[in-house]
Image 1 (cartoon, rainbow, N blue to C red):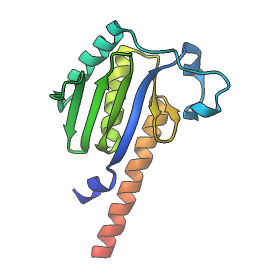
Image 2 (image 1 turned 90 degrees about the horizontal axis):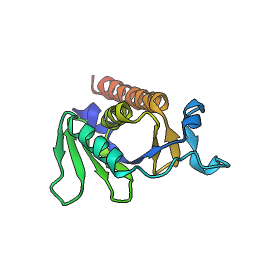
Image 3 (image 1 turned 180 degrees about the vertical axis):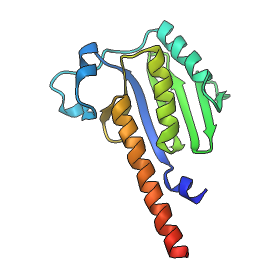
Image 4 (image 1 turned 180 degrees about the horizontal axis):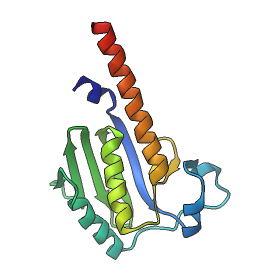
Length: 154
Protein backbone atom coordinates (compact mmCIF):
# COMPACT_ATOMS: atom_id res chain seq x y z
CA UNK A 1 0.00 0.00 0.00
CA UNK A 2 2.84 2.40 0.82
CA UNK A 3 4.27 2.01 -2.71
CA UNK A 4 0.91 2.91 -4.22
CA UNK A 5 0.63 6.11 -2.21
CA UNK A 6 3.98 7.35 -3.47
CA UNK A 7 2.65 7.56 -7.05
CA UNK A 8 -0.54 9.46 -6.26
CA UNK A 9 -0.43 13.13 -7.15
CA UNK A 10 -2.95 15.72 -8.18
CA UNK A 11 -3.53 15.23 -11.91
CA UNK A 12 -5.34 17.63 -14.22
CA UNK A 13 -5.98 16.77 -17.86
CA UNK A 14 -8.32 17.53 -20.70
CA UNK A 15 -9.27 15.22 -23.53
CA UNK A 16 -9.01 17.07 -26.83
CA UNK A 17 -9.72 16.32 -30.46
CA UNK A 18 -6.73 16.75 -32.73
CA UNK A 19 -6.59 17.26 -36.47
CA UNK A 20 -6.10 13.95 -38.26
CA UNK A 21 -2.63 14.87 -39.58
CA UNK A 22 -1.45 15.42 -35.99
CA UNK A 23 -1.78 11.70 -35.25
CA UNK A 24 1.46 11.21 -37.22
CA UNK A 25 3.42 13.71 -35.09
CA UNK A 26 5.94 12.80 -32.41
CA UNK A 27 4.29 12.93 -28.97
CA UNK A 28 4.51 14.40 -26.41
CA UNK A 29 4.83 18.00 -27.47
CA UNK A 30 4.00 21.33 -25.90
CA UNK A 31 1.01 23.22 -27.29
CA UNK A 32 2.79 26.55 -26.78
CA UNK A 33 5.52 25.47 -29.20
CA UNK A 34 3.14 24.81 -32.12
CA UNK A 35 3.05 27.41 -34.90
CA UNK A 36 -0.50 26.32 -35.76
CA UNK A 37 -3.01 24.79 -33.36
CA UNK A 38 -3.19 21.00 -33.62
CA UNK A 39 -6.60 21.01 -31.96
CA UNK A 40 -9.73 20.26 -33.97
CA UNK A 41 -12.23 22.08 -31.77
CA UNK A 42 -14.86 21.10 -29.25
CA UNK A 43 -16.82 17.86 -29.23
CA UNK A 44 -20.38 17.96 -30.53
CA UNK A 45 -23.18 16.78 -28.25
CA UNK A 46 -23.54 13.40 -29.98
CA UNK A 47 -19.84 12.62 -29.45
CA UNK A 48 -20.01 13.83 -25.83
CA UNK A 49 -22.87 11.37 -25.23
CA UNK A 50 -20.84 8.51 -26.72
CA UNK A 51 -17.79 9.38 -24.61
CA UNK A 52 -20.00 9.72 -21.53
CA UNK A 53 -21.48 6.25 -22.06
CA UNK A 54 -17.98 4.81 -22.60
CA UNK A 55 -16.83 6.20 -19.24
CA UNK A 56 -19.75 4.48 -17.56
CA UNK A 57 -18.39 1.11 -18.70
CA UNK A 58 -15.11 1.58 -16.82
CA UNK A 59 -14.56 -0.46 -13.66
CA UNK A 60 -15.09 1.59 -10.49
CA UNK A 61 -17.06 4.28 -12.42
CA UNK A 62 -19.99 5.79 -10.59
CA UNK A 63 -22.15 8.65 -11.78
CA UNK A 64 -21.27 11.84 -9.95
CA UNK A 65 -23.96 13.09 -7.60
CA UNK A 66 -22.96 16.77 -7.68
CA UNK A 67 -25.10 17.93 -10.60
CA UNK A 68 -22.35 17.69 -13.23
CA UNK A 69 -22.43 15.39 -16.24
CA UNK A 70 -19.58 13.42 -14.71
CA UNK A 71 -18.19 10.12 -13.51
CA UNK A 72 -16.10 9.43 -10.42
CA UNK A 73 -13.68 6.52 -10.44
CA UNK A 74 -12.72 5.35 -6.96
CA UNK A 75 -9.88 2.92 -7.59
CA UNK A 76 -7.19 1.36 -5.44
CA UNK A 77 -4.86 3.80 -7.26
CA UNK A 78 -6.79 6.92 -6.24
CA UNK A 79 -9.83 8.99 -7.12
CA UNK A 80 -10.48 10.46 -10.53
CA UNK A 81 -13.32 12.61 -11.91
CA UNK A 82 -14.20 12.72 -15.61
CA UNK A 83 -16.70 15.34 -16.64
CA UNK A 84 -18.28 16.66 -19.81
CA UNK A 85 -19.21 20.32 -20.22
CA UNK A 86 -21.98 21.88 -22.26
CA UNK A 87 -19.40 23.74 -24.38
CA UNK A 88 -17.96 20.44 -25.67
CA UNK A 89 -15.00 19.92 -23.34
CA UNK A 90 -13.89 16.83 -21.43
CA UNK A 91 -11.84 17.13 -18.24
CA UNK A 92 -10.10 14.59 -16.02
CA UNK A 93 -8.73 15.41 -12.60
CA UNK A 94 -8.05 13.85 -9.26
CA UNK A 95 -5.48 12.53 -6.84
CA UNK A 96 -4.33 9.33 -8.46
CA UNK A 97 -1.56 7.46 -10.18
CA UNK A 98 -1.43 7.65 -13.97
CA UNK A 99 -2.86 4.14 -14.43
CA UNK A 100 -6.55 5.16 -14.11
CA UNK A 101 -5.91 8.19 -16.37
CA UNK A 102 -4.50 5.83 -18.98
CA UNK A 103 -7.50 3.51 -18.61
CA UNK A 104 -9.95 6.36 -19.21
CA UNK A 105 -7.96 7.66 -22.19
CA UNK A 106 -7.69 4.19 -23.77
CA UNK A 107 -11.43 3.66 -23.34
CA UNK A 108 -12.25 6.98 -25.01
CA UNK A 109 -9.83 6.29 -27.88
CA UNK A 110 -12.00 3.29 -28.76
CA UNK A 111 -14.84 5.72 -29.46
CA UNK A 112 -12.86 8.51 -31.14
CA UNK A 113 -9.33 7.82 -32.44
CA UNK A 114 -8.52 11.51 -33.03
CA UNK A 115 -7.94 12.22 -29.34
CA UNK A 116 -5.02 13.49 -27.35
CA UNK A 117 -4.59 14.03 -23.65
CA UNK A 118 -3.52 17.51 -22.60
CA UNK A 119 -1.67 17.75 -19.31
CA UNK A 120 -3.10 21.01 -18.02
CA UNK A 121 -0.23 21.44 -15.56
CA UNK A 122 2.69 21.03 -18.02
CA UNK A 123 0.92 21.97 -21.27
CA UNK A 124 2.09 18.77 -22.96
CA UNK A 125 -0.09 16.86 -25.38
CA UNK A 126 0.07 13.05 -25.24
CA UNK A 127 -1.08 10.28 -27.52
CA UNK A 128 -1.61 6.71 -26.30
CA UNK A 129 2.07 5.70 -26.68
CA UNK A 130 3.53 8.77 -24.97
CA UNK A 131 1.07 8.47 -22.08
CA UNK A 132 1.97 4.80 -21.69
CA UNK A 133 5.68 5.77 -21.52
CA UNK A 134 4.76 8.28 -18.80
CA UNK A 135 2.80 5.60 -16.89
CA UNK A 136 5.76 3.22 -17.08
CA UNK A 137 8.19 5.91 -15.93
CA UNK A 138 5.87 6.71 -13.01
CA UNK A 139 5.69 3.03 -12.05
CA UNK A 140 9.48 2.65 -12.28
CA UNK A 141 9.92 5.58 -9.88
CA UNK A 142 7.49 3.97 -7.43
CA UNK A 143 9.26 0.62 -7.68
CA UNK A 144 12.63 2.27 -7.05
CA UNK A 145 11.32 4.19 -4.04
CA UNK A 146 9.64 1.07 -2.67
CA UNK A 147 12.86 -0.96 -3.11
CA UNK A 148 14.89 1.73 -1.36
CA UNK A 149 12.41 1.90 1.52
CA UNK A 150 12.45 -1.89 1.87
CA UNK A 151 16.25 -1.94 1.85
CA UNK A 152 16.40 0.74 4.53
CA UNK A 153 13.87 -1.13 6.67
CA UNK A 154 15.82 -4.41 6.45
